[in-house]
Image 1 (cartoon, rainbow, N blue to C red):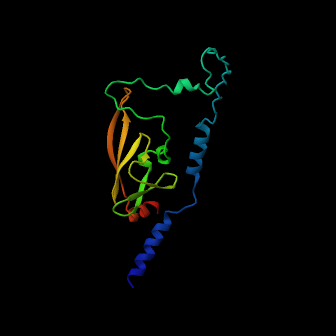
Image 2 (image 1 turned 120 degrees about the vertical axis):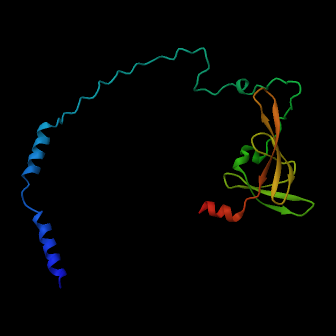
Image 3 (image 1 turned 60 degrees about the vertical axis):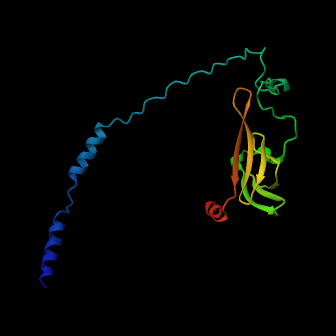
Length: 181
């Protein structure tokens, strides 16, 4: 019972703060309108387009296909370098980088084992020992139930190549399913 008068008194005190006099707000709005500059500066003048003629007519046109001699130059043979056969026919997985390939499983038995490889375009390929893959003349040297071993020949920038061994691991199906969801 004693709470009711306290609540009523607090409500009346709060309502005394509300009044209809808005002259100070209207005065402030008028001051802002009078003192603000609403002028937008003009746009800068447009520069005239200056045509530059193509003066390198003696050079190859950038719009034509280069001659085969320009991009098929074979590097000079350096003594002690590993020589690769660039004339052989490339296999299907040699157009993909190794990091764009995924090992999905194996087929076969203990004597002959094939690895199932998924490329970045979701195509499946069956590979075995001595098959080629990757951009750097990769060659499969071993197929195991949970990985394949690959030897690649990486260019070192001086015309030679460096041999590097790497592995392509079998993906865990539960982890791969979680990545796609």
